[in-house]
Amino acid sequence: MGYQEVLQAAKQRMERLTKPPSSLGHLEEVAVRLAAIQGRLKPELGPGAVVVAAADHGVVVEGVSAYPQEVTYQMVLNFLRGGAAINQLAQAADCRVYVLDVGVKGELPDHPQLLRRKVRPGTGNLARERAMSLDEAERALLAGQEAARLAITQGATVLAAGDMGIGNTTAAAALTAALLDLPSDAVVGRGTGIGEEGLRRKREAVARALSRLRPGMEPLAVAAEVGGLELLAIAGMYLEGYRQGLPLVLDGFPVSAGALLAYRLEPRLKDYLFAGHRSREPGHRYILEALGLRPLLDLDLALGEGTGAVLAMPLLRASARILHMATFAEAGVSDRT
Image (tube, rainbow, N blue to C red; front, side):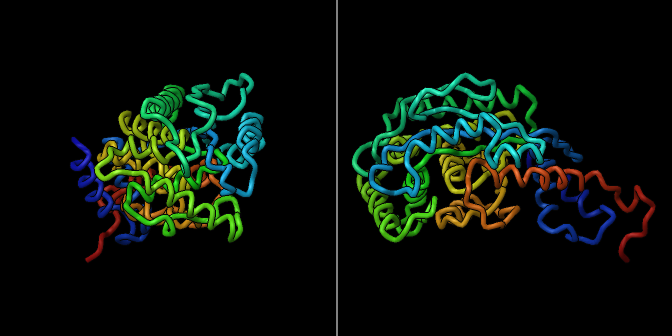
């Protein structure tokens, strides 16, 4: 049976389980979608994987971030040493962490969790020039696909992306505004905690980037003009995860911007997406609305790294188990009259 057929069969089974109708709320919708993705009425989720895509951004020279650019490199080292939030949360959620260097400035040390696929050491300044060439965008997309294949080959049954890149909420805002035809003011937030002057500069940078776009540009060309290398890699991860039939969990704003690009490249991917949480970044809400997704968590998170997605993985596993419940007939329990 195909996706829609299994979805309908799972909904029918859900109605016969030993519980009042809809008593498990949104988790019931998650459960039947997982069944449809896996093509079986009793879905099972095992280990997860989060691929943290890392890259630098030339736009930081515009004063759009509260942190200096070298923090990208330093935080990648922290990921590899196991000292970051994503490492701790992933350990609690039965999720393996991978790190993908697709554009970090500086050479990183060898590490078994590091996939080296540097396209270039950071993007151009999107406020004043094209972020990357179309060829570089395609290479970043392919790097993400390769990272997803590696994670799946090594046992991942549910896949999430994470992000690391000082300045990347600026790129995410520009990409989101471009793909959803929104003004810069609607999608630009405070990111790492910038003040009013930094927010003004960030809005101006995004507005300048959007002014270079031409009507009718293809999504990949738009991403090359205003996006980030890690955002392209994230899109590639989700495209590959969809092709291999895995549930795909979104994190916050930059990751969701990458997923939005993946959706524009492959609309059928939307059926495989789950929103891990709702970020406090304003642009995130527009992406979730465009994808028709309801967040599993709403905890005022704004860290990134894949943390919100990983926190949602135990909920996905719990949702999958719902369809393993007995029906009224199987349990010999009287149904409603």
